[in-house]
Length: 155
Image (cartoon, rainbow, N blue to C red; front, side, top):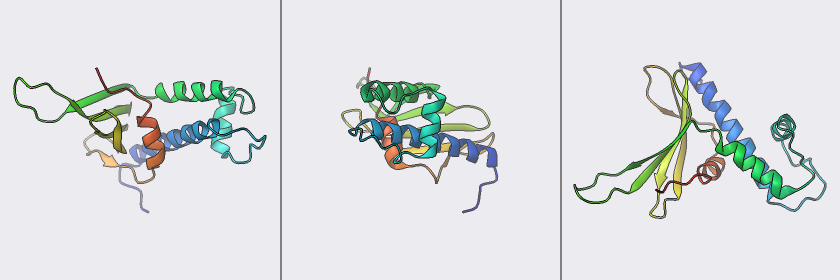
């Protein structure tokens, strides 16, 4: 794979993708019964846990909550957008954006919302000054679904 011209925006997107994937891994880890084996966790997950002083061996419910709170603190903004609607008709959210970084480079997670305001088709994108938003090829769809599902998109 070749790296795009705007390398720093690509690498900012990669860093965001890796952080979200690591948080997803830790969230998944919290949902399993603890068998005393930490070998299933990646080095990135262990490092993030150590950096945040999260105990991987005790109180899985508390760890799960800490991981979720950390993830929910990543976006600078959570936005929704409506489809075209006739005047006088209520507007309903149909798309979402989780803005993770602005300027050059900028990073966001976008996607659609179903009729229950649940996210689907999440996509991590990056952009630099004067360049269009570009889908990041290295993001995990499963991790993005988990991440986008943490947020409420209703009124």
